[in-house]
Image 1 (cartoon, rainbow, N blue to C red):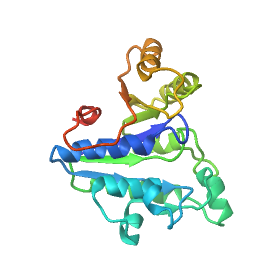
Image 2: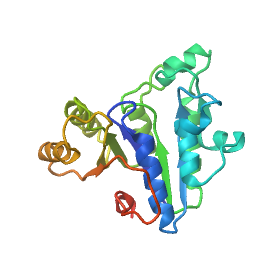
Image 3: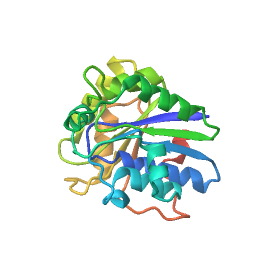
Length: 223
């Protein structure tokens, strides 16, 4: 089974949008997809249908039951903060070894594709000593880096990529997920990023709802 880690240049730039879209495209091709978002902050049960875990379950065609939620997002925290800060508010913590073991067990499940969606940006702290980048390094799987098209994304994108390259974290692609407040056309942002990352696979994902039969934007990334 092929596995990818979905990370980002920051929070709220479209990781779940990309993960859900990729899931839908691959499932539409008749393939089996295993998707998890092990750590989520800003989680509330009354907002389940609209938070990241609920959106991923919907993309998979799964009901938002407590059992399904626990299966894909076992570490859930209410405060919309970094995991270490949100966990501290609840007198809890993210056990790094358990997190890694959960991901490896997920990757071992028989399927065509495994997608592990991270939390926040690539350098967000998980606990007292580990960041998302450490998590990716330990799992040793390629990443799809999601970035936005908002004002400031160029610096954030190049910084995230350079940080990952410095840590020797393999990047399968950078996906520019169109932001609601894009100051320029999406294609212009993509062209600029391509100019500074000439050897990187750069994709764009316009703001549109997925519908069966639409052209695939991302599926060939994991084929």
